[in-house]
Amino acid sequence: MASSGDEGRVVVDLRSAAESATGAGDGAGDEEKHATPLHEIESLCMRCGENGITRLLLTLIPHFREVVLMAFDCPHCGERNNEIQFAGQLQPKGCCYTLEIPSGQSEVLNRQVVKSDSATIKIPELEFEIPPEAQRGTLSSVEGIIMRAVDELQALQDEIKKVDPQKAEAIDQFLLKLKSLGSGQAAFTFILDDPAGNSFIENPHAPSSDPLLSVRFYERTREQQEALGFLAEPPTEQAGEAVLPVSAVPRGSVGAVAGRRAIAQGNPDEVAAALCKYSAPEEVDTLPSTCGACGTECVTRFFATKIPYFREVIVMATTCDMCGYRNSELKPGGEIPANGKKITLHVQNAKDLTRDVIKSDSASVKVPELELELTSGTLGGMVTTVEGLIVKICEALERIHGFQLGDSTLEWKKKKWQDFKERLSELLSLKEPWTLIIDDGLAASFVAPATDSLDDDSQLTMEEYQRSWEQNEELGLNDMDTSSADIAYDTANT
Image (cartoon, rainbow, N blue to C red; front, side):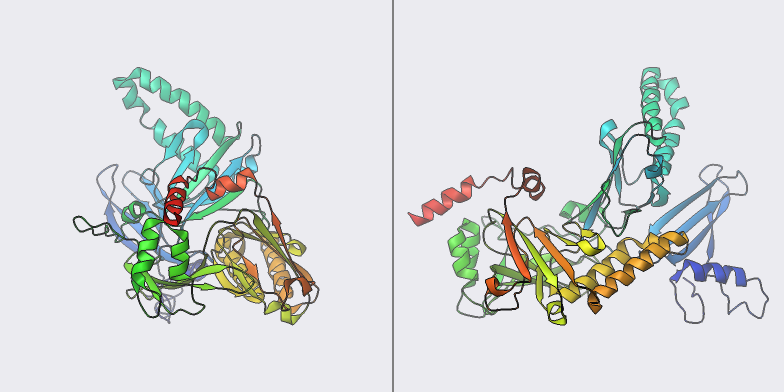
């Protein structure tokens, strides 16, 4: 790829690309100064068989992703199409957006949608699915994606009618239903599932929560990793020997063999005895893992420890020797608590900003003064401070909701985001007291008290509550069968 500008950058933002393209014609003397990053290659037209021109632009959507914009134009038959591909790294987790579209609300159909090459679109009401290969990476709207699917199905109808008239009639009936969804005449659910994590649906109410839109982040399976084209070697197993999910490097008095045996037998008492008898990482265990950036096989190191006033936890750290990617997480240890926990902290002084915070994957975060709410899984699990949590929230909002900050955004939307960012920054300056609420259905989050006893800290309250059926369903607890583990536990104790 050719460089753009004097700094030799390959990836440029859209504003710089437009200015470079405009300045390219100012004169031969300024040609090098205003070198356009637009590239043109001759390519085959799939309609007429002649050669057309494909234009490529490697650019950056502000606060979102690096992308390659491609546009093909055939001067012989007039065929034109465009496509967007992602040039950045693979995201650490996959994402699944679910948008509920009510009947008669056409403005919801106008929401911008970024669909990557690996994303699948589903409409459960019609049992309709658009696989990744059907519509390549595109930047469109909900209505645009639906109507494009209608056009592609309609284009084959003439051939189908000649071969199977009955099937063609059924497709015509289906197209009528699909068109009614695209025009907003019926309510439906729009699901965008992307294992690569590079897709996006606009939230016009951001940074506030959207009652119509929900986002879920998940770990990719080995099959999804292979489908994305990244290295995913199957686990090796020797004849007559079971594959153990954990390996250990003994560094203290706790034996790795006992830890493996306890995990294999599913005995929670022995697991606790093998892993949680120390408060410092006397023994570091390792797990085979996959890099969230480049997909290469790597190693995750972890150890268990006890946090005062809290519970047993597992600290995990991943480092990729291939690309340098690094990540650290904290997971709760022990059994799943019977109740959830809601933590409320009234932030009043600078000392409150330095309180340690443990936020798990299952925790949601709220700041009522800003009407800010982050659903569970948005930031993943982390160990930080109150100040660090607010900073990470600000960075995550800029990354996820990049459309509200780009050059094409309407001024009133951009001003809304700028005002919100200023209010978010004012939280750290403590101009006014504010409230931090962490709601965790698994009770795996924690805020450190300012006193030796939790009861003496008047600014911090921890409230346990009974989880609802919907929360248990989301956490996968309703269908969890622990009968085999209970039998093994009873057998070990008799």
